[in-house]
Image (tube, rainbow, N blue to C red; front, side, top):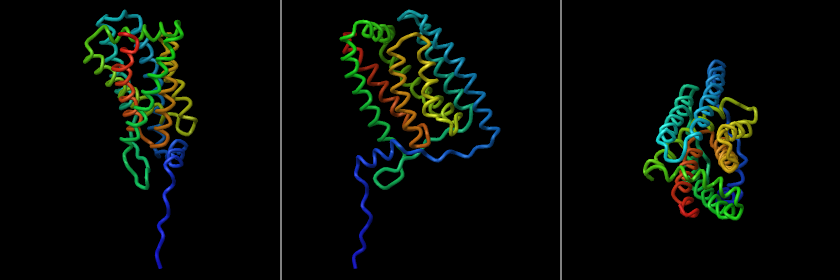
Length: 239
């Protein structure tokens, strides 16, 4: 008698399950949870203040790029001090694995959608002007420095916002609240397009964090998205 192995779910069904999955929370001592909440509250305020200071600098001002690296250090140190960080795993096609390919694929898709959005925004002069104002900062330094800053901040933002901050909310709607705080922090410069980008990126990365239980997928997605933005978006705007 032949034994039939259970059929794997279809790819679309599996992707749907990943999106809606909620990874089991890590059991941490109360002291760790309280320390994390205090640390992230302080770091969010400090980081937002540095961001506000950054956007008072004109494109090409070395202080802007220096503050960008300082900001990355603030997010990263805050994440480490707040408590344990986890990489996370994902069950895909019947096996558990680190979500490297998932994070990369999501980042490429998201980057492509943002490029299409950038083309659409060009037809709306007030928003196009805001995008150009942000992209001006990519012309104020060498492309190597711009890429370095983008990558370093991508990692630092994810380990803090989708690592420490997400964990600080526990079961209290971490996807919603971590994303809202991310948007608020990113919008201190007053740019609507930056806020919209933070909302979309933050939501996607928070869902990845919820599904995998760690920061690896969000970090990779943010890294890939950042590379697309700093290398492919400026040429679309003639920069």
